[in-house]
Amino acid sequence: MKKLVFLFLLCSGFVLRAQNGEKNFIDQNYIEVTGKAELEVIPDEIYLKILINEADTKSKVTLEEKEQKMYGALKKIGVNVDKDLAVKDFASNFNDHWLKKDEIKSSKEYQLIVHDTKTLSLVFIELEKMDISNITIDHVDHSQKAEFQKQVKINAIKAAREKADYLAEAIKQDAGKAMFIQEQNFTYYRPNTLNSNIMIRGVSSVKKEALPEIEFEKIKFESTMLVRFELSNSK
Image 1: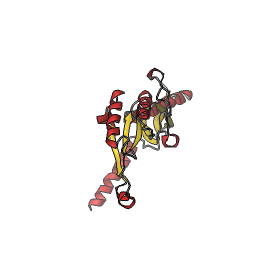
Image 2 (image 1 turned 120 degrees about the vertical axis):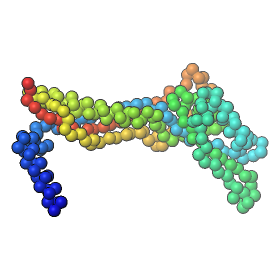
Image 3 (image 1 turned 60 degrees about the vertical axis):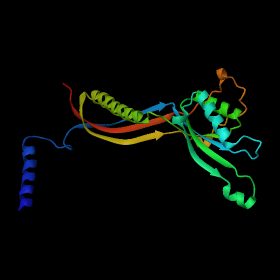
Image 4 (image 1 turned 135 degrees about the horizontal axis):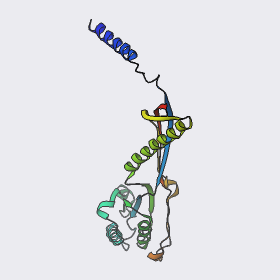
């Protein structure tokens, strides 16, 4: 009985709206457009992998000594080692030592984040002076990517609004309020630096005033929005 009453009220509502002249979505005049926007930014987070190997003989520098020298060199060029440097992996040939009876050697892999290409160049230069040249660029990113994602979507909707306005004006009508908004596509393109690692060698004698220039492909944000606007006759 409750179901019958509910259906009756629902049908009555449809009849009442029809009698009052209200239109559903399909009956309304509208214009449907897509707005597209893109934004390109220079990366401000460059992730490096630094591998330090322990010396093969006792006469060479130990792993701990290399670490301390690396910390000092990075601090000297303005790197915040407490915030931007982290140990990613630690390994040794301890198991092999018992089989081969050779010296135990260790290695550490670090992740370092630098925020501009000038600092990046200085890292390569200063660490090469310490015979640390096993440095590769893992990937790049941007610290404000969430804000850029939001902005490019807003720009896409604004582009849809502008397109609807001039198309409606062409047929002497007005595009009104938005009736429907749908995000059709969003792309976040981050360059793949793994396929093109930058290795800087033989630059220990380069002066800081003439650092080698390094340019990265920009990070790209793209958005496409589908929007339907009410369409009415111009006044």
